[in-house]
Picture 1 (cartoon, rainbow, N blue to C red):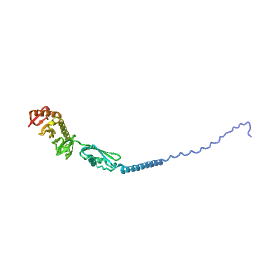
Picture 2: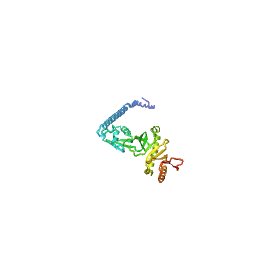
Picture 3: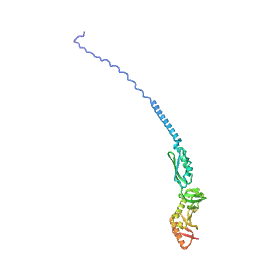
Picture 4: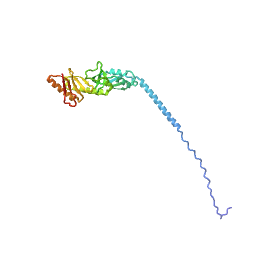
Length: 279
């Protein structure tokens, strides 16, 4: 028995805390292989479907009678008939519009010397449109054979039956000139054609029609006019002033009842001086 006068300190002992349960292991990161495979499979599937759809669509348009050529429309043809242009293109009615090689057809059209430019286009479902720009002859040029030339000075085809001949005639050039200096020949022809145009716009054309523009060895230009073949030695530009001088000389000769064999208008150092060689 514990004495009453004795303090007894009770020691309170708390029970031990229960041990915490072990923490769960962190989850392992999800595998990235599966999503990648799913994405790749989706891409392959979409690509495969797209290719299949494209193949079916292409096969349809390449074989459907709806896209057969039913008409070839030609615009800009004057010297050549539309039928000629179509034949030159090689485009056949009934061919599939998508199977045609329009670049090759254009090249065939441009092989015609009369055609300067050509544009071909599809107009669905069954029309091919051909736009052409033809060359316009401005002169006849003696270069061994006689050629037609444009106003830009380009000889573009030999003269053939049915070609226009009511054009200024340029002489004095040689075939080797075109080989040796093509651009130089073009420039000379442009000057000769410009001179012819100036003459035909002036008053002398009614009195003495233009017969020929001759190119000298040095490039100087001479106009042969009238049935008697009077020579107007012009040299180079300015043409209008020199032709006006020639008109005054012809008027004075008419007053005297005289005829000139040649009128020299090529003194550029003293342009007011004109020399007349009488017949």
